[in-house]
Image (cartoon, rainbow over all chains, first blue to last red; front, side, top):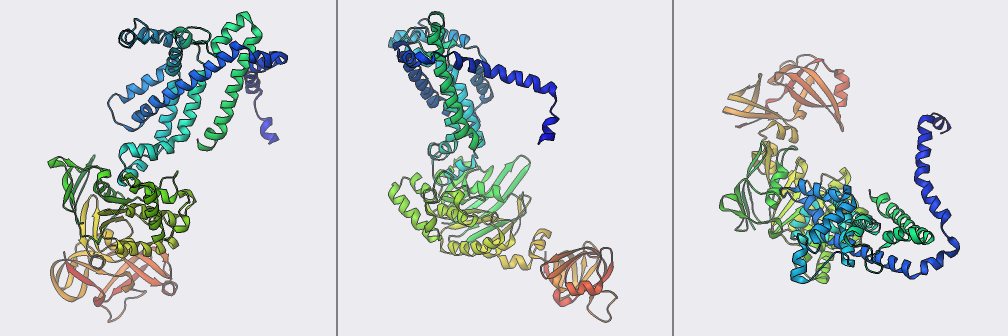
Length: 264
Length: 350
């Protein structure tokens, strides 16, 4: 072991450690500078509690929407021979690389009061999404859905389709086979995808602030609150950031132990 | 329920054609080398691959006929399938696996589970009912798969290499049990295998499939006795030649002459078992009619006998004792005299 370690070239080691420090230091800084003495009081303030509650509700709702729409979408991409499937897959990945602000602008153009669809939603149903809590959910779902779709599609591709054939020979319709055979098989992939999706939704900033604005209590989620607090009350911003960091770490640990580690 | 089918399936440049007819309560085996199209035939019968042309009729009901625009999907056919690797659902217990088909057909959970438990009992796995597939041995998994396929009481049972995934010891035991279950089953059974022993033990009739077409059909005994292709001859362990007979003398197509005991005329197949061959260092005097010089091309130990591959006119396989190998000091490339008694050969018309 010692002999092997001695052969590692310094030229690689030095940038490697600098890179590691670059990733770790900001998080350490957040922990060092956190106002530990007033932490509990800060967390208990109405604004923080409200932002936290709103964030959890919106991220969870967005994840629910992504599950209902994203799992069938992933199934379609993985299991059917529909024409244009490749193009569809390309479109699914666009929100991954699109700057979220651009996503927010695009959502405004479609769902805004005079948007492509928004004008009808407003005229026929009196529904207006922008600058509402529902708007936050829509913005988060738009940005986070690709994470779920890609994870579930990967799991579906890894699952042997012959199990669905076996189910069919036993008399199961395609829907029954999907529900009772395919879904349980890819459940770990769906769970992992959901957690990634939820985490992405929780951290969403650009699309949310563009499409839903920044109104405390209705559209001001944690990341928006952090940004706002940084100008007025840096301590509060640090506390909020610390909460988000804790959530990220919990997600990472749970993913590693439950899904990625044992199943991948 | 009689199965009657004219299968015709095109996959790229591969074409499978086979006429299949199975009476209720009987088993038909499709025997052939890997890639012969056996599994394709099974998938077509199950409805997992539509026919290109032809038809499948099960119990008087047309389930696939492209020319008439008829195609009944697998879930609406009364067909039970035991897949080669069983495809048990890993997230369900053995009893839930067996109950799956019954529940998919609308039976209540309680009744389905009771019926499934009964089936597991019948295949001797009552104690393993709550086990997950990964906790089962290969032989147990095979029996769960069989119970799952039989539980829906299908008109047609399809078995894809049902014993291929088992080790030798388990295989003998499961083969005997499978035979018993097939005897009790009232529907038609189609079995796919590349193992002649499985086919001989389990089937009432054999279809030998090579390169997508049926090359021989008949009862197992008939096929074992009168092989018509090199593949079957090798499977049943016979030396097989094609030739033209004139009385008791048969001129072989690939060179050489064999003498047989019974008169026959015209194009014939002629066979003799490797055990009927004797090898000698020098030309034997005044002995059997069939004597020729051959060269040893290979020597393999087969349990308590030694199989010697020889090239000559004609080529042949000979099974001799280890003692004979020692006495003759057989090595590759050595020349030996081969004798086969005329009474050991068997000739039949092409």
